[in-house]
Length: 436
Ligand code: GLC
Image (tube, rainbow, N blue to C red; front, top):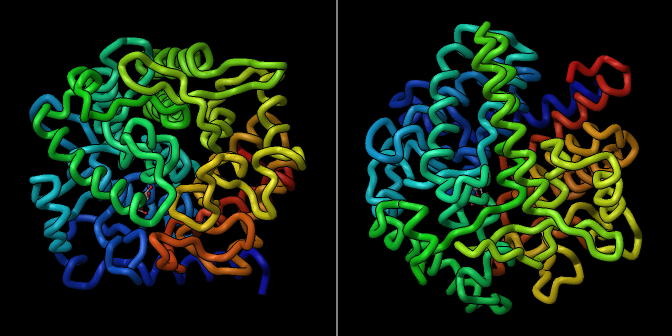
């Protein structure tokens, strides 16, 4: 069998097995794919997961790709100050997800968001399976989502969006958030405590009406402007500008492009620094925008949004490949520097490889013309899947499945099929047929 077809079949099989139960599907307007079924905790729809799923489906089932994205917007907030917000978890009621409903005091969805990749995914699907009707239906919703960020998450008007919960970053348990959460977690007990703190934080957000401006000053609140999140947002605005152009909305397209460039500029001007010729990337923490010193792989995502000059891109891409450097693990890319005092290759978000993050880095490298470096990330990603399956995340030293509190993670996680996009798109790039 042709190698490409083999990959399509393997990935289609993982995604197919992760569709919701028939009784849930019957209640839905559009189908979506659960992040994983095997542990029973990933049954609702998750925001950035579904974007990655759609990017994969576009290669063999574009109808499903479009449904996945339309489903994601079913519970977009339509009233109140947070109108336009797309929740990070949705379809709670259909799944009978009682604990999540209780936690968020909401029957349908969560009350916080996740990295905004929906326009990026919609544009990617449209490029493979053009559908201007669906795109036109999605467009006002995607616009409302970005307007919401400007209205509710950029209280200091610096062009950078703030998150008010670690879950919004997508990097739930990362060291990046330890100082804001008041805990530097090492032991199993501390990691449990950190998880409990994340749950407790939801009621603090509710008590302050999810108002970022207030939460920035509440001692028990959480407020951060993450570098990768903002980089992704810039890329998503750029994709939305292209969508507007596709729909013939030329003036809106230009305006969106300017908004995207303003975010790119803000990321560049406020989030990078140089020391001894090395480039550093910083999350900004708290209302004082303290430049975080935690070194994490989110910095490479800046390549994805074209926030760096050619020489800056060169500097950062070298950091990914120098053998003595922080990211030189047998399997790349660990989420945290291997020299971080709290680096833990096995434990959930404390230093593991996540294939969606690899995808963002791979795309970023390609966009700066680093084909060979991008290929290395592709090869590492393929080896991980060949050796251990479609794990939720991987140990960068052994290549084996990662763990959460000593329990192995799911081995058929939908978003790890993103390796398919890397395999198939690489073929096109090598053959010189890339359309982006
Ligand atoms: C975990 C991850 C988050 C992801 C979710 C569903 O919570 O930290 O990024 O979206 O699982 O896969």
